[in-house]
Image (cartoon, rainbow, N blue to C red; front, side):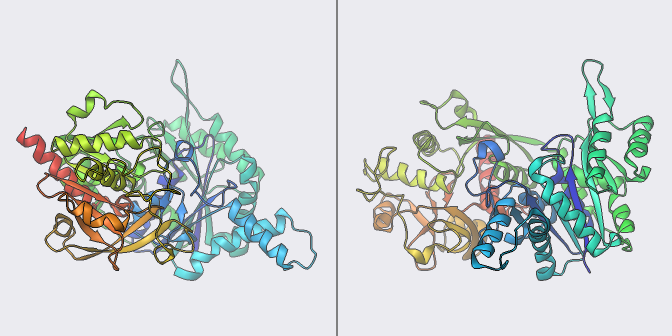
Length: 532
């Protein structure tokens, strides 16, 4: 039977449960255990696909096309695994299933209740990845904060789950934070005590506390947390603030967290080799060079809106011994800010809607005309195609913020037929699709192969009717769908680095295996800086 670790959060939201799960999963994997993480989100949306990046950050996409919480990105990057739709579900998905069953008559007139029906569906979904993948350990993160009204069915469900599988097969990890009183900066444990007391009132006694703190816990603080929380001293773990997320697993390892967890679950600890991870941390904390990448976007007010893109840039920078400073450039500005003149490279990420389109196109034109390395992602490719169509192909009405797709056939915003979309995505291309790379292209050189599989999340395509006109400008469609209909990658020969992809390569980048397109951008930016 698979062992299960439940991770909950207290005191405040955004406390770091996702990083905790990712770090613990990585440590257990390095000890040779198979681990599957899962995120249970209490919100009523069926999935993260329609959620505003300003509120919840980016939407992460799995190989099978699930639009999920961004924590799955942390899981994949730290644990170097590819997850599926089984690793994320919400209250909305749970209730949809129950309502569909009720309409079919599955309950034969019974009253549908939170207990046992809602909690039963939550438990069923927790068990699905165990049934399919047979891992040694499942780590289940419950979103939100203990005490949230919408989280109560999940808390009750995991309480029942632990009783059903046996407490020796399940443990509870509670992530909390120290409070520091202004202006004395004195540390206070009372919020932690109250959060643990609330969790205990729901029938759950935490086995371990992960304490977010800005300085090491004093002996008195640790003793008080252990005493009032009913936790063994060795199970009070300090999670200090760090300069890089990738330091977190090593901080936990120094406190023997994985060993304590395995002991609690009745599993024999194994030796682990963390040399690769230690080498990664040494690199990211001792980078010798610095480059600046201008990210031209419109979701700039939320630090996690482009989380995977930022991490992918840092992965590439670490591999090339360069710290990547990301400068946010507002695509909605009427003019490009002067700071764009100081960047070593420009990246235009994905997005939806017409807002900010013209600003992105202007930035791409600047990159093309001034030989600044450029990488376009998803909408970034579409904007690059529009820019080339307007300025090089002379298609002045190729696309604009005012175009009407019902009466025109623009260069992009072409809806492909159903061969190119999944049932899951409707009119969206979601999940992994194959691209065939043109021999001799820069893309083929970067990837080192002729066929690639990349994750997608977008609705519109480059209109195939314009492929030849675009190629007449010198633009190379260096990646195409297997049937040749859809443009997957484009590039401009003769430019230091001008590439764009219809996919989201950031979702496949790993700390120890940066994605080729990001490596290419950072390498080109370094070359530009050296030549200046």
